Length: 88
Image 1 (tube, one colour):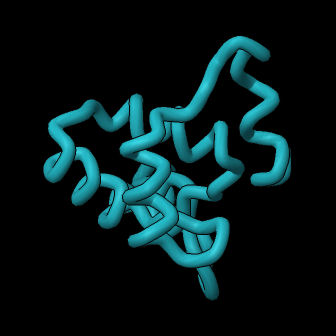
Image 2 (tube, helix red, strand yellow):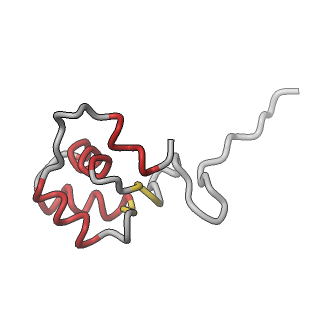
């Protein structure tokens, strides 16, 4: 799924939170929102990470630079690598 399709995973009756939308558009890069900025918005507005994520989806912003390394980021993509097997 490309980032332009994230809004499609929510129902047609879902609408972005307007206060969160303003903050995402003010603080994010064009159509991109870093995990760090997302959590700054969570703290500043007193909303949940899920609300920020859902609003980002609904306005077709891609979450980037995941703090857990799950989504990865350029140039090396995933920051969390599988542990090498020690079994022989």
